[in-house]
Length: 559
View 1 (cartoon, helix red, strand yellow):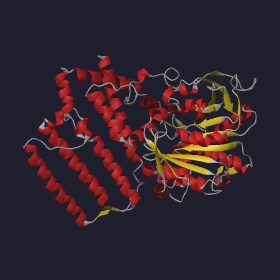
View 2 (cartoon, helix red, strand yellow; view 1 turned 180 degrees about the vertical axis):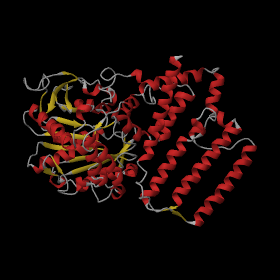
View 3 (cartoon, helix red, strand yellow; view 1 turned 30 degrees about the horizontal axis):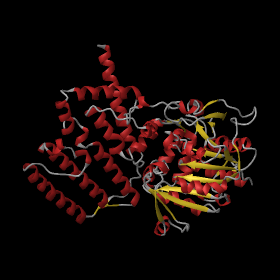
View 4 (cartoon, helix red, strand yellow; view 1 turned 120 degrees about the vertical axis):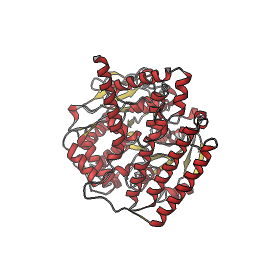
């Protein structure tokens, strides 16, 4: 009896957690009391929407009586929906309501940001209320239950119980992966660590290496092994195969001991420290560096600090899907305003922790049908076990962020865009001025990126004075970056001219089939320096020696 009560309590808590995660996608859109924006609707637009709704609803009713309406939405594309007139009609009415509500959001007479927030809220609400999300309305789930004599429902309950234990909806079979066993397997060793990161050096795969070591600064909002999932799609292994003596920062997953860490700490005690250590291990020569996503923002800030000090330890930089200029941040701009940032500063500005699951949920709900409700339906209503997928395993392996660091980041980047305003912000005691970062830079952006929109990635060219190359790849934030040449997938675009806007750049760009990696490798080659014999041991002397094998213990810590 007690176990039944415990199960019911767990189920209730999980339902509340899922609801909490969904509401987090909407909560940041709510203005403070007394600050509601002006909202009005033109009578002619409302009348047109009403007339269109009545006309289409009448047509659907007539079609429904004669065999069921058709629709192109993949959620309702199965035969079970079309063969069940009631289910098909409910799906068609739902889609009509969705179109009408989106039309109402578009018809609102208000400022662009409020309109975008209305559109986002409607999209979230309609994604959550789809008839496919409920067993009583999902014709496919009902058919599966009949065909399996109820086994699919039993498996769905087992999947729910498993997700209750781990605290989030499974996107993949997480039992199939283990960091260090079948993901993050490139051979190497940790050669330095402090409270913020471990520095991994990878074993050379060539007899000779370039004399300039290569440092990778991954994002701290997730784990570095997105760049080392499998040998065949590992950007880290590709760098090593190209003859670069490669080092990667593995960020510590913050816990209570780090809840007072700041942006200055992440730049000074992490990025700058990593640059210094890699340079020292490499014999004091300048190094090359790469920053990915938020890692690119951290690296760009660190380079500005170094430039303010008159130091130039980095010979060239690569920025992958990174913001320096936050003037075009896409859908994430919906969550940022003065009130939202002030709330986070009051909540976390002095001490605290942004939970990794909260951050992961926000990103998932940017694409709710693909990254949330699709798995709710498959896992629980149909009793399916999601197949093993390394990328989705990584996506579920969330990381925390220290509150003060996060609060500073929100205000000075997304809200005020201070990094590109010379001298506006001070980091590690230095005024940030990107105009002083005079080194060659390779900048990459993904065409369909919803985290760092392509125009936002391109904007960096306006602020860095050195010789620059911009490349655009197909697909999104992750799939566009992780595109190894052997797959012969997608394409990329180049243009040696760098006009003021990405739109103008694209007009003169040339498309090339396949991966952008060889283009980058060719650019990087002359910046590597001369070839020297590959080192026989990790690190340097007794000061920097192997602490433990890669990928190290920091990356294995769970949020």
